[in-house]
Amino acid sequence: NTLNSISSLIRTNPNTARTMVIKLSHILRKLLHGHENFVSLREELEFIDNYLDIEVMRFGRDKLLIEKEVESNTLGVMIPSMILQPIIENSIKHRIGPKIQGRRIKIRTTRNLDKIKIELQDNGVGIPEAEIHKIYNSGIGISNIIERLKVVYHSDFVFEVNSVPGQGTFTCIEFPVQEGMARR
Image (tube, rainbow, N blue to C red):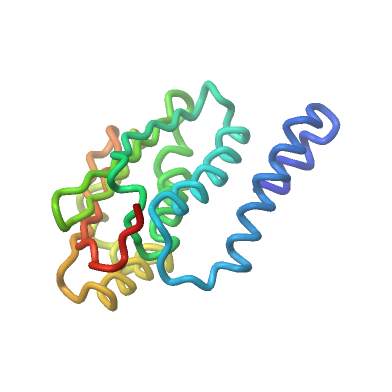
C-alpha cells in the first residue's frame, strides 16, 4: 500500500513522495536490524511515528488524527519490541479504515510504581461482541504479541481488547517494569 501511494504521489506531489520514502526506509531499516527483544518505549514510539506518518500521508492529514498522552516516566521503560505496531495496523486496516471521516487513534502510557500500562484506542467501526474473542487467536500479529508477553511475563500481564460496534476499539496492555531493564 505504501509503495502504491508513493508511486501515485511521485508525479503529483514529489515532496510528499520523498518524505514517505524516507519514513519507509526508517521502518525497513528497523525491521532488518531489529534483532533486539526489548527496546525502550521511546524507541518503539519513534518506530510507530514513522509508520503512522505514512498512514497519515496516505489518508490525508484531515482524515486521520493521532493523539498521544505519554507520561515522561514511561519513555525509558524497556518493553518487548514490536508490540504496538500490529495493534495499530489492525486498527487502521480493519476498524478505522472503513470510516470515511474523523479517523482517530489515541496512544496513552502510564506508569504506576512497578507496572507500565499502554492503551490504544480508535474510534472505528468496532468489533461485534460475538467476534471479539476471535482476535486473540486469529491472525499472526495479536497472537504473536500475546505469546511473547507470556514468555517474558508468564501470567503477570494484561492484554485486553474491548470494543463497541460503531464507536471503536480499546486495547490495554499492562506488564511489570523489570528491574535493570528501565532506562532514564
